[in-house]
Image (cartoon, rainbow, N blue to C red; front, side, top):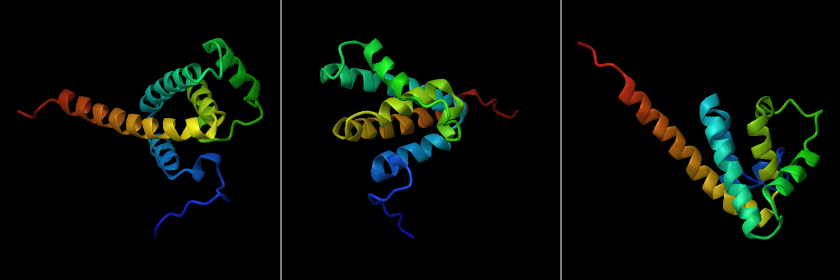
Length: 129
């Protein structure tokens, strides 16, 4: 059955099929991959927001995100780690046009990170004698 995307999506990121797919893959990834992607996501978002002159400094961006973080919300899969939670909150609070750009970069980054980890795992396996 084909997954359909609509404006009546349950989660904010399900409105964009690319972002939804990237988030699903990220959710199913191991903790190390999630942190790597989150750190890269924070970097990408801050670069976009600074280049678009939405904020004057990284501190302004982090401050705006901290203001939005609701301590009562800890039931989502990405709330379990502070770095991941910050990255996803930054993404959620981006303007929609910026979010669409970042979603493409995020999807690419998630896939590249998983592929790299798979290659690293293959290289570290000891051949049987």
